[in-house]
Amino acid sequence: MKKIIYSKLNARQQETYNFQKVTAIFADYGYTTIKLSDDWMGADFIALNFNGKEFLRVQLKGRVTFERKYLNKDLFICFQDKLDNNWYLYPHDKMLKKILPIIKNSDSWKVHGSYSFPSMSVNLKKILMSYIIE
Image (cartoon, rainbow, N blue to C red):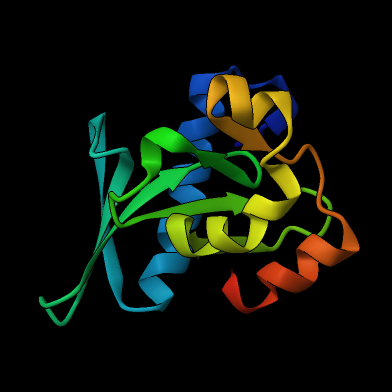
């Protein structure tokens, strides 16, 4: 068997790959995951706690992302920082309140209702530090 080269995968293959990687991490925290076929309530997958009482709706992204369409859906954003390989899981609405002053005047947010950071600044990493999952 030969390891794949992530950058040579198409977008759908990369999403599947990322889902499999993050599923293993969720298992370490006592969650099982269910991949959804149609972004139910904005989620790519549901993470169910082994205790049977907790669940998370998770949108899997390639980077830090905020979208108006995700507001008020109790949604978590999960992504891997490709520079340090850390995985992050943050509550979209709670984090948006902290980030909105930075992005609110951008055309991307004002016109399109979405904003993503192509890379993470030192300040952004500090803000997200408590949301690292390993």
